[in-house]
Length: 464
Image 1 (tube, rainbow, N blue to C red):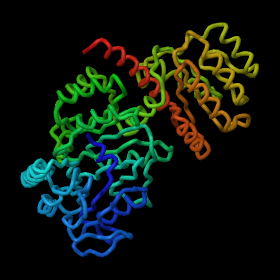
Image 2 (image 1 turned 90 degrees about the horizontal axis):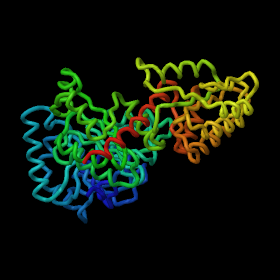
Image 3 (image 1 turned 30 degrees about the vertical axis):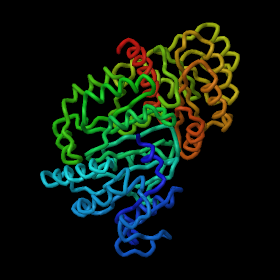
Image 4 (image 1 turned 120 degrees about the horizontal axis):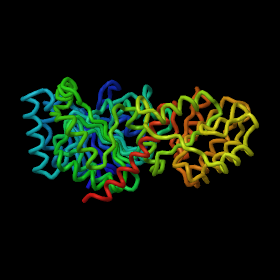
């Protein structure tokens, strides 16, 4: 359905410009620099060359029908040329604002371009959008300056968003950890292609292990529930639903022309169809990474491993508290497992839960403790803090924890707290697809979402 959007053989940039501060230049430059290997057709009445590409005076002069046309011109000009573009394109991305979000005149513009698109069987992403970013195919229409932001690499997360800016900022903020995305699609005003169609598509996409969404309103709430329920059985869906308050809803209508409904209704609908809710951009990606890399947690009993006693104490409060916590339980380790842990660690370490190996912990101590906890039937999951500041810990610890994450029976979440060196280790964990987080709270919340996913799967088994 959307294969030629995700992996187009040819792209026209209508409104291409030779001026670096113009949208038509940025889009062309991003396509070139991101390694897109298909045919690129810049369109500008002046002709000539831009960035080494031959420029065509009109879309009608382009020698083939293109899979994707990106229109980088103002709204009123977009409407005037839209029929010529629709005749030559399978998919069209009109980037400009000035459509339905601005009122009656803008809505009329939307009506016109949709009518034309239907006439020629073309599909529209947008308008009022930054378009799409597909790392694996090099398609990048995003309106950001490469020197000031970092585009993430290929990964397991499909990102559907009504807000292009929030989506790009979110990806930029997590790219420092080397978090990857399979696809990014900004729906904008959603005049044609909507979240339900894309949810269905990515639900069947083998590259996408989890789907995240930023939504201000739903194109068709009942259809969303139907699609989401089916997709949730196969892979997790995480939604950041904005416009929760009266003023937030008004801001959404000014932003994308969205008409938000009752937040309580949306919350209930999410629970019925197996959707996991996030409340900010950090939770959105944190939950996605836990769900893409981790295993659902089948019970509430958590074992904590640390080399810093205070970290273990704060974590215990977060795990067991219903207030600013996740309301789960610290596991009661069996006597046999505690004896095994005692044999692995220094004499003054604590073998209770949280297991505090102290600053004298070594890589091998972690290996032995994780081996023991994996054999304890009283443990449902393990939160292990890989703290690299102490002298006996090395980069080898990343491989040890990765081994237990991949081969062990217990789901594992990792916390790594620190500065530059810790960030480097986080990237290694991320490359190994181990769910890792830079704070106690974020690590604990990852446990909660993996537990919730298990409950949702159990619930979905019992409903049609």
